[in-house]
Length: 358
Image 1 (cartoon, rainbow, N blue to C red):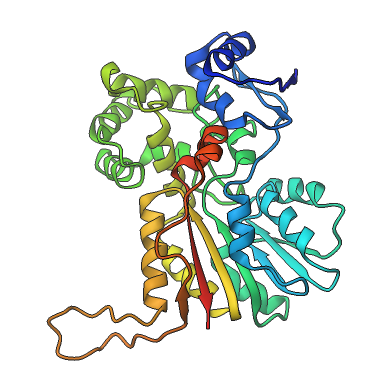
Image 2 (cartoon, rainbow, N blue to C red):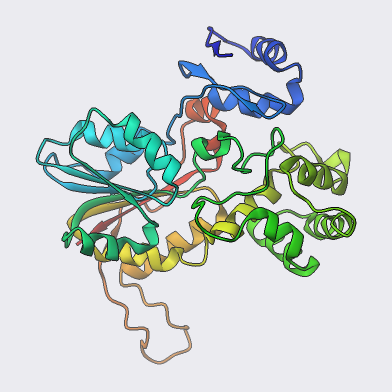
């Protein structure tokens, strides 16, 4: 069932369409709002996934930030549904090249279909953390621009049996690279209560992390937590009803577990440094973050790359060996416009930072 987009101009009409499509306005409000103003959208009912079209975050800002040269070489290190890549390719000549990297083979397959009209694309099944090794294999020394969109893609959120979404009932997986061993099921069923509480608090910024971790451990004593629905029910019982007014109650915990499963934070600082190393003169690095820890890592890596000394103030001289590699294009992070935030809820927490190599 595909529900065609109609002209929905106010909140009352949005609610009417949501209720008609799902029978439950509360459970699917965010999902519907996410897809508004797209040609068609996907509805998930009782775990069944219907058709979907992706809308990339801050598309125009990213394209402008990359300052694309028609004959340049560009990397989309988080290819996903290829929404950003498609716009990059439109600005490249036949002499230009786009390298699309994603550790999710299914996402790569979807991107190939979306970009089938373009011939100047190289598809790489790998992690952007390995960007230097990837370029070495391609015998490319430097590139003109790199884009990283660090959020989980809408393709992954909505794909059945991936376990990224707290809507519906699917297996607890959350792996971006389905060949790796660690899954969300392993995390929630084997990590200690203390480890779970720390992960949920640090990566999800969830103030009820201790209670959630405690209830997870109580539940798994009698039954294995296999599905997203089981985990959602545990989380909902752990958070007072009066405090469940900031989006879906499971949102923060699911984010935290996803970050742990895919090791999204720890290598990020080094990844930013590697990206800067492989940029040509005047090359641009654009990074979109969705979490304060991600944004902090990117911000600090950028600051260090500007040559600013990071030594403690009480040291008599610099020992950190600060060296200037470039400049920060935007002193403050770029955020999505109010219009985009209304149309795409995923963009509300997004921050774009741009660095230019000298």
